[in-house]
Image (cartoon, rainbow, N blue to C red):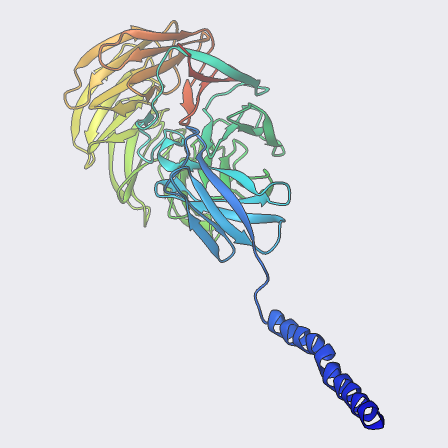
Length: 465
């Protein structure tokens, strides 16, 4: 019995010894696991980005969404799946072929799936005249009458030059110098900028994340496009009525003092100046390595972009107020006092002239082998670009001072008596009449056109049928 008890005691002792290491084993294992877990990447959370065309509302299948080092190509529904470390507001960059790259701070802490709107570059209106050649023609927007008014917004004073539009925002300046950023979807004012002693008679221009504005007080204003905050300004000492045109970071424009300027926006200093000797209200048009601009002496000038050196100058027989249009190797030049539009080759050879018997302040539009312009005689003209033969004319309802504009095979013109028409470019049949207008009639983007009244903007879309 004693031996049995001793054996049992020894067995119990051995059991306790064997059991202790076993009891500590889980603790030892958890330390190792913790060390292993420490070296492991933290768990990521799935979030989703839907890329949508901001103009058409369609899903963008070709989009790629990026958050930090994570990126994913969208599926057929425009959906990208990303993994983030935490649900928080994070910057998402969306890119797609043919679209303007966009970075947006997305509130993933509110919802895991969010929509980012991106905009096709070809459907925007980033500068006066649409293109560097100032053709006043938007070839990609598909929108024809009849229209319905979606919203309207008072601008507070005379609108002489049209809004420019980029990424869902319209930017416009009134005669008193106030610059507005307005939502194309809702018509709401996003921000305002009013320069001291400001007065403006030109359109701004969208240049990346900045907005370039020219003032009649002689300043070039460079604003932050998102907030309207002033980045910097440059003073030339003479009123500027030319709308900006920027090529490779250089803003080209003329002023009332008869000087053409090339202002480097990156270095914030002039590259060159060219003295024309006559007052300039015309905006510059660019093709290839040259710019073309008119002056009050009646000359259209071809100037080298790099050096400011004059290539050639030709007279049109009267003052040039408006802006030349460049298309198919030709330069189409309006003259107010000569009451005409004159065509030259890009090398300065005279081609033809059309006289209207009244002032032609109107900058011409060039589209589809035709030239469109208005006259103070109250008519909108269509002319063969090669021969100068008048194809048709249509009554606008009063003197036409602003540029003609072409969108989707409709030529628009506004009258200083407060009316606007849209005529079929092929035959001149009037498709559209609007009881508000003054100067340049139309701009817009792929979702809406903007009609410009005396001091009010009207956003229109095709009427539902």
